[in-house]
Length: 230
Length: 288
Image (cartoon, rainbow over all chains, first blue to last red; front, side, top):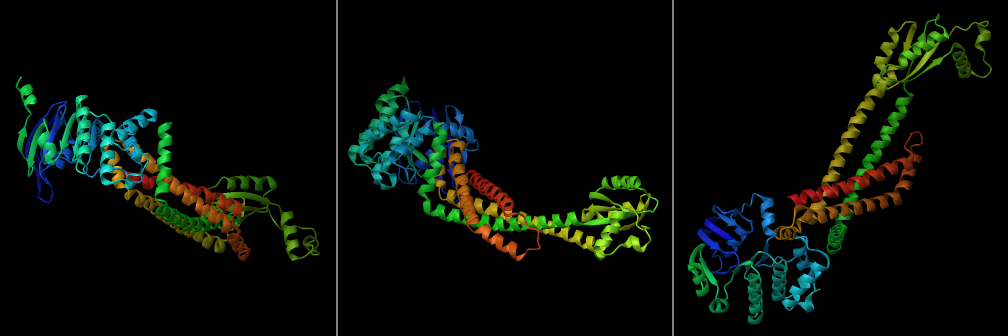
């Protein structure tokens, strides 16, 4: 589904964000990506989203190379993806509902179907009482949940979640991860950048570790190891 | 239909959300358009004055004594088909006498003095574009039956130079102010959009098409331009006619354009430039 082949990304200031990264994520797999700040997690997401081009190597989705110079292809790809950005990227001046709805509207989902789906996911994330509040007036944690709702409501094939639980308490973190798992059960491929030791300790998911742009660990849970052996 | 309403709502909402900045933009757009109106108004009037002068410019072609009325009409028709000739008119010897009598006084009778003999010949008054006056005069002088040409060179030549110079200067000035207005209006709209570049980027990251991203901003630019135009028109409607009347009374000898005609032309121009520049500015900003 998602493949990174010998990916290098060096920024103009000389920072090597990714070095020789080889990674393969199967359809319907949920992958946790750990690593300290600056390890390359966000850069990997930016490359998958076509926001940047690798310095060398390539990223593929369904065997299709992501080419930031091909806007039509990148746009088509982005419509298949739900992204939870580290800085949320909510549209200021709009309500929580409108932020979720706009994510659906760009996909052509409109009318009652759009409103219903937006409400459903906001309620799921305990935001029923803040549904018509402007996002500027929401707490950091509430904004994060709006960002999660926007990504999930699109019911995408791929979810890229950059620190989706960073500002949430344990109960809400668990809720978000549970929602991501449910999306995965529906067949979506989910990549989650995370650094919460609690989450990582109790997870039964595949975890890769990045350090200074290099892949330094790839731990498969027993069940998946079995599956990959067979 | 629901998407069109959405785009319109988005544009209106954005105008409301950034009300303070948009009010300043509307005022600035209006000021740019008022400056343009002033220049275009002056230019239109100058053109009108020059047109009036042009229609009064003429040369006179005197025909030989043996040329009859029919012969005069033939020469007049040949003249009428020449480049730069606006109109021709045959003047009979009797009409010439009457004119001279009118000029000299009511009681004067030339024919009595000349024992009934009319010494004047047929002549043709030729209305000309001053720029072509010299060419028309040379052409006339070569025609059969023509005795002489009064080409009014001393008046027509400077008038031709003034007409050409005024047309160039006025045209260049109008174009320059028009271009500055378009750039200014579009830049004002661009500033508003640049402040929202993050929102545009987010929409693109969500997979929005370029049309989806651009249409609300284009509508917003058009609305800003329209509001600026409306404000400018309101100011012109409130103050324009009285100012124009003052100018008309200060220059009674100048054939200025009627106020209704001038303000009608200006209204079309103001709305066209305002809305057009707003759309242009939005398009350029969203694309960049």
